[in-house]
Amino acid sequence: MTRTTFTRQTRPVRGVRSWWGKAWQRAVEEAAYSDAELRPGRTHARRGDVGAISIEAGGLLAACRDADDAWTVEITIPVLDDAARTALIEVVAAESGRIAELLAGNLPHDLVEHAEEVGVELLPFGGELTATCTCPHYLDPCPHAVAVLIQAGWLVDTDPLVLFALRGVGRDLLLADLHARTIAPRGSADDTQVSADLADDVELVVDAAVRAARLLPLFEAGAELPDGLV
Image (cartoon, rainbow, N blue to C red; front, side, top):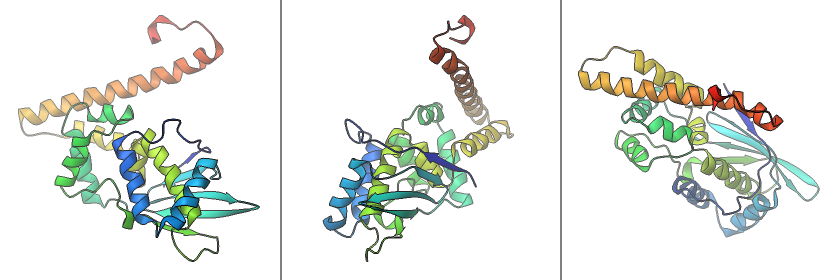
């Protein structure tokens, strides 16, 4: 199981801006028992009391500082089963450009609607966000868990593939499944064209990532950038 750890988050200057980031925050508000947990949870999040957040399929883990104590928070979210994962891959592949949008940090609204039409819930609702914390608070999610959920929402707002990873479809798995789909035999000319378009999208995205990985060290060192990589 792949786990990705994100360094300590800082509050977004302009707040959560994407529609899917706001949907996540609404789910957090639904999950909270009352404003008594929401208010201090927001304070913890904005003050930077949450440490690094580790994300894997089905959940995330982080510590939250509170005065002289630090409490460990675990959040769980249901992962997609095999049938739902396959359906989601089909949805991403259904239109040329969707994978490029996702990798560029955008979650197309019609992709989520299309997924819902085939029975795949990508965005969580409050009841799916289950939290535990080592603190003695008698309700879950406690303010520490709310803080972690809020900061997880900042990650989702910046990169919707964090949401995919939580649902069990990480970036590498998504690309691998899409690649496998492009080389699978297809029956009709329309299917062949869609697969060709998708293969082009995946190839372009991978090429752009490779170029960026080569250019970044040169850029940071102030070296002249070679024409072939620009």
